[in-house]
Amino acid sequence: MEKEVKTIGEELTKAVETMKEAGKAGKEISKQPVKEKKQTDTPAKGKGKSAKKDEAAKLQEEIDRKTKELERCLAELERKKEISRNRTAFINAMDKLEEAADKLKEENTFETAFYKLRFTEAGYSGNDIFTISNRFLLEEFTGFMKKKIQSKIEELEQLLINE
Image (cartoon, rainbow, N blue to C red; front, top):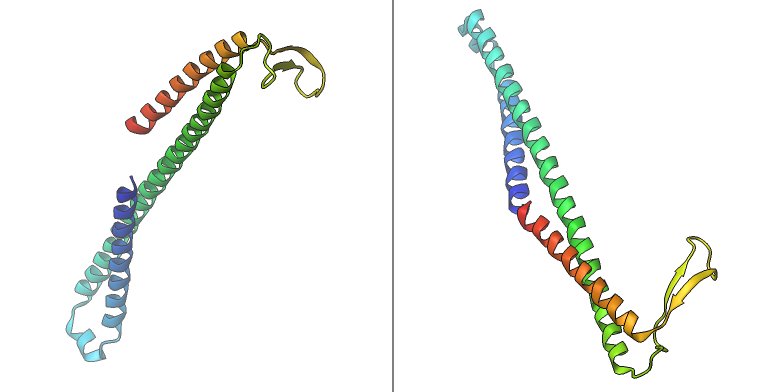
């Protein structure tokens, strides 16, 4: 994707340079002495200007097309970056869950002193509906969450591969 963006950027730059050169060539022609201007007929002059205008219009269309393509590629690249950031966040959550699961396995008690799973009303701190500190339930919960997170990581990786 980055190579595509670079290639489009280079093509856009070339098109702009070609357009600048065409404009300079038009200026150089107008700087020629009056004798040379009289040597060409009026229809040729009109055709030359028209041809240059057509060429300039074509170059402008190409620049516009390349610009749109570049914007599309940049938007796609930004989307992939966002997917990658989400994937990284899930991987970090997975690491923390695995650490918690390992710590829970070290304990031999029914209620753990390390962790509590709290259910509270949103926005109200300290108003617990209930808490779970049973080691076995917390181990099951961490196992369940690890599977869900792993599934989401795989889904994000597929998105990155397929797009």
